[in-house]
Amino acid sequence: MSFSVFLTEAAQQDIQRLFDFVIERELSRASGRLEAAEEALEAIAAGLKRLERFPHTCRKADGDLALRELVISHGATGYVALFEITEPATVIVAAIRHQREDDYPST
Image (cartoon, rainbow, N blue to C red; front, side, top):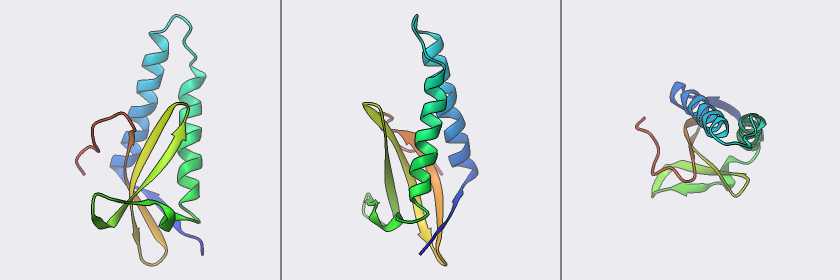
């Protein structure tokens, strides 16, 4: 079964925020790599692509039966996408954060 994956406006803004953060971080380093921001986007895109086939394999989020979390590995850390599986065969990504962030932004 194949699922359609949609990002909320908040999730799209999260991706932009994460991209901007990596750019700023790399610009502040003497040996910064601007490619790191593009690599982060590629990791997130690849992770979200997995939701098209395997959303049910992701962990449930904080006891909420409707919400799940996709862990997206990238380097020593990575990202976490909060999403909901809806019918028919639709995945709605509500938020994306870096694994070291405290929590998801309010939705």
